[in-house]
Length: 317
Image (cartoon, rainbow, N blue to C red; front, side, top):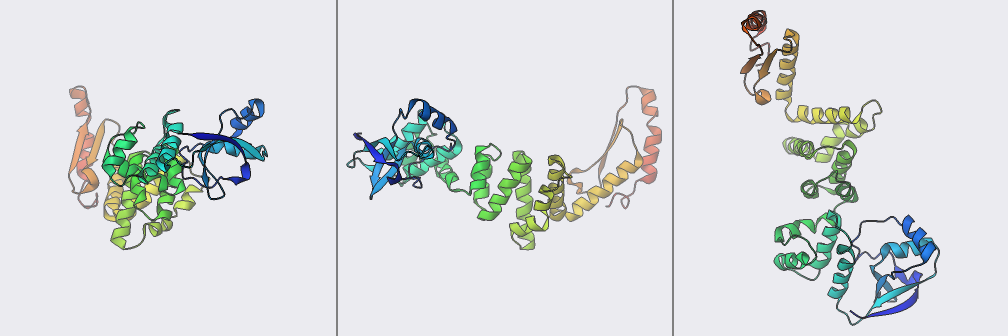
């Protein structure tokens, strides 16, 4: 690709045109220090557009020079006869061969390439040239990630939200997805707990014919998150309990009744009275821990206590 090195007015460079932006890094403090010390060594790459220029490579370098109040800047301008695909490949190469790309940057690569290739199979092949998986399914999914609301993208960048969860949040209304994203980032939840919360909220929404947003609002989620009296673990438990209670009111009521009953027996650490999974039926498992016959004999009183107090009504059957 041919370039023309030239000094241009920095105001003619459009900082808002992100057509070729791949990097998610925005910090410029270290660049400012470097440029102040040794000058601008690696010139940004631009392409002419209308009366100004679009950035292909060097977004942060140009931002640093603006911060230093430069009025002119040395750049390399792509030959106007060059195909736009070559400009796209250049923008990608300037990033992908310097470091490992994060998910958002990978998404931007695929999104940029997708403007030139309609077929997911061809797109996957072209993306593979830059180290991305040669998978049409992957490219089809990941190109959506960079279009998600900013809270979700921020969660992905901080590793608080996985690729799988980001795709699930993409199916929700924008405001709803953003609320979930902020919730997951704030509480530092595992993927399993994230899925549980989303699933419960969806099921409640479907059953009660209300929006997911209303489900979250009625649960006072924001109030819980802003409570200074609750730590992250307690906030998480409050939110999960609210959704579980609303999703399975009968099961939760039975669970509480069973727990109260078991606690009232004061069985001790060597005896476990275990209800059925999800409390779906009145079947219990009784576990006794002992080392010898004397230990087993000591369980007689415990067994009598369970027999005398146990009834289907007592445990909420």
